[in-house]
Image (tube, rainbow, N blue to C red; front, side, top):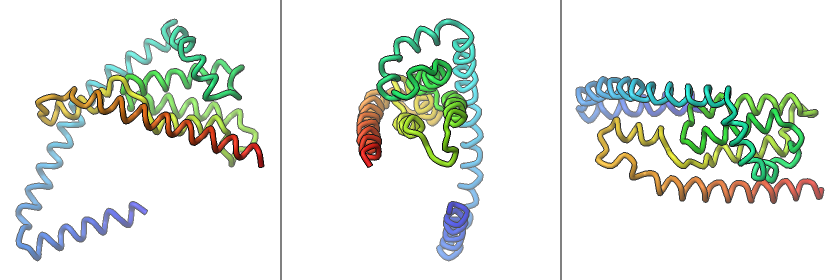
Length: 194
């Protein structure tokens, strides 16, 4: 779908620029945007490397084990069918911790690893399990205490208060998580009754 939408947007933009006589402004904005994109990528690279390294070190120490124990009651509630699978619970915990710290780029590979482990345990390979659905919803809501990526983006774009987004992010992600988890639990319960 996007391979149709984006070319249409590009064609409309160029056509409008030509007919309105703003082709020079379009051209300069393209080069400014590419420069901004490269500067943003470079500024985010340091943050990503730092937090990916910290998560890698944490996974090799007992820190993750301790955090997994703290998260264990919540994980058992959200993923009741995984109570006896310590490996998957550890992978889910690492993903949740990375999301809580606002490390979306570190959370993605951890989430993929957890999803792959759940798929390996899945008997019906073409159907999501209840745990997989809950994991997708939890990742989509992505509860964050420290939205480091958003703060880094705001800082790189010259925001006067880059951390001003923290409190609204708490409200939005917690509300999204509660609504998503509640709806997923309701859907899972209703499908079991059928």
